[in-house]
Amino acid sequence: MNNIKYDFGMVGLGTMGSNLLLNMSDHGFSVIGYDKNPAQIKKLEEAGGNKPTVKGVDTAEKMVSALKHPRIIMMLVPAGKPVDSVISDLLPFLSKGDIIIDGGNSHYIDTLTRIKTLNDAGIHFMGIGISGGEDGARNGPSIMPGGDKTAYGYMAPILEAISAKVNGEPCVAYLGLGAAGHYVKMVHNGIEYAIMQSISECYDILKNGLHLNNDELSQVFQEWNKGELKSFLLEITALIFKKKDDSSQGFLVDKILDKAGAKGTGQWTSESGLDLPMPIPTIDSAVMMRTISSRKDERIKLHQIYRYEPKKIEANKDEFIKELKDAFYFTMMISYIQGLAIIEQASSELNMNIPLHDVVKVWRGGCIIRSEMLPLFMDVFKSDVKNVLENNAIKTKLLEKLPAIKSVISKAVNANFPPVAMMSSLGYFNSIVREKLPTNLIQAQRDFFGAHTYQRNDKEGIFHTIWETVL
Image 1 (cartoon, one colour):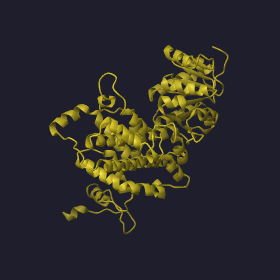
Image 2: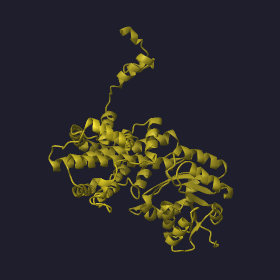
Image 3: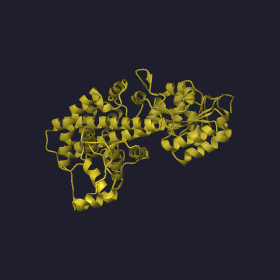
Image 4: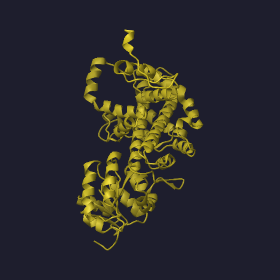
């Protein structure tokens, strides 16, 4: 081991961990990583040009002893028990004031527990969300830090240097107390689920309702990825339809099994929505559809029983594609609105003090849900708005796209398509902007069978009725 004292340590030298270290090295920071796999250590050092300022070691003790004080150590390991295992390995070699960062997709509830445990030991602990995949890690991710603000002060120069930049501004900001960083990243992923689901619904309708081929599909999504809908997810969608299969004729997308994976963050977002409570039905429906997709054998069997096929949508192709584009815009905007609303509610409930303006600013570059829609939300949060739907610019956009999503859903459902994200978005909108809902009947039913009481709309108080007298 040389005599260099390193600026930053990393536990886990997989693709993300190594790329983040190399990104830091490019910006003049000395970095050291720990991994039990010698191949990963060798790969890191070779990618770093075998410079002494990019080092890999095979024990936690070697890494910790080579770091500057206070030691700054990030973990990029799978969520759950592996995180606690790494913390246990590190603690014997740490001193009061050292900083441990969990850069993975840990559940925010686990992060809150770890913050308390390590604070009692004099160690700063932060949960930091990182989005952008391996390319983002290497060239500039979106970074969502939360937790100990003193610890963030030590890390800020490094994180600002390596993050994505938009108009010269780094896509990183201190996002609040406690588990704010992991909570924001969790909801980021929930929004990601919703937008991906709505894109897949558009794909289904275009392919099986309008019978577009892959070249035409690529062209449609490429055209959509301009102006007000420009986004990373549309950009990669257009490219996916161009990829030929290396092992057989045709396009790769057509050979991929229709079972979507999930790592838990979408489900956690839905669970948090139920716990708060906060309505996020578009995100919920996206989580549900991944679960339905996983039941492939059941779907095959039921298809053989029902023979329920999607039908051709009888409409002017160009006009319908324009309607579908507007319906997607509506759904995408509602996805952001629901995600930001749950962050605002959780911030209040858990005393995280999350600045929504900075959340949106961080999401503008590097992350998976970056889009041209986000600057509109930045403008909204420059004011002291509590409900995004009250903003005039948001209102104008939603009302502009409203006829299109109604038309698309009607045509799609009549042709046997399941546009659940679109339907959930429209149902949410139709409900949340309505003064009176039919839930007075539900409350009457609850009081009838369970004496749950009710409130009245004509006088104050809590009431209960003996309903059986009507029998």
